[in-house]
Image (cartoon, rainbow, N blue to C red; front, side, top):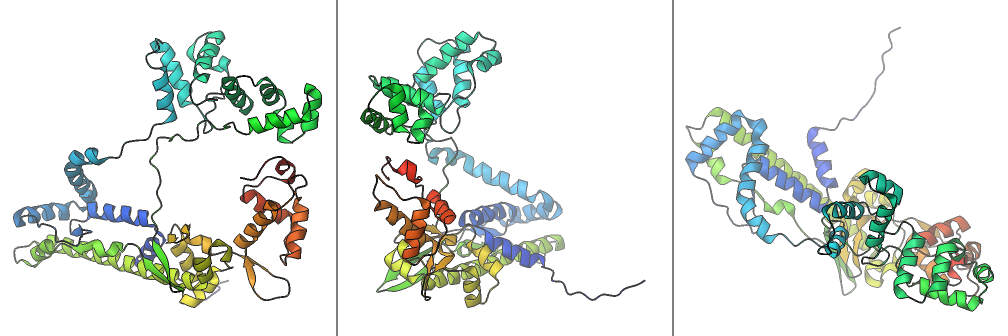
Length: 457
């Protein structure tokens, strides 16, 4: 049986899709997109100083455009190669020096000590196989099989690596890492015994049990604990992984003057875009081939479209930052503890935009203010209603109050998560024990058993 049904659907045009993609781009991603476009579109000029770029000779320009019009699909590769030829000579001279990697440090310590090529090959394998903590978790037998050597020889080579700096490097476990550092310090036999055979009991703060098994006073175990807490469980910390560091570039800045908050865009990417006048003049010449004229027109429209999308992105971002500055005024004036609950739906309604548009605008964007650099998402937080009605309190404020309560507790009798929940309830914040545990973990604060003898950092 034939059934007719009427449906209403919404289809996004290619222009709308491109606009949303630009809106969602971070500042770095947008810069990369413009560089790609610059390599693909000969009409595009990128000049941050706003100065007119020199125009190519007309004959050469026309010849290039005729070629590009016939082989447009090769445009990107052609322009990238042209840019690379210009940049290769000077880019090496301004490149920042690379920070020393852990692998480099270890191999430098081994250089000049008379080791053979085969030994150095194994040393490099070990150095390259360390995990993010600086541990080598492969067994000596596995290392021996991999390189066809005796297990005793593999153990010897591993022993050489474990005597390098930083102390504890190339250990196979946390216990061995701590023991290696204690061995360097000397005179730490009790501490070495504890980390080697009683580390789990120490983590659970079963100090009396350790004292009983080692036949020493609890006070001596406490002294050992204090010593062990000064050790570094992750000796690889402080070394670069060889990858370039990721830097955050704030998109907007909020300043406070005389109690008023003002939001400003940090960088207008669209301001650096312009269309080459030289190529436009070529298109107006009577001897310009039709295919070249069409090519120039298409590339000009491409630049106009990206310029429109960037302007729309910047306008949305500026309006969003201004709204955040208004809604979170107390935060910008007084600091983190004044952050209040704010939902994307509220901002979307205030700006007359869809909530998904706000979500895209927030993604990957950062705001700078007197308190530091924050992701825009930081300012959107759920809250808890205070007893007696009235205002809500933001999740971040709940965490700060939780931190303050723990900071004031008796270290000999730290609060359990249930007790913390009850204390916050007295303060008018109804929060479950499970949520307290979650927030405590997010703050990097240990549970009550661990806090009993561990000072808060």
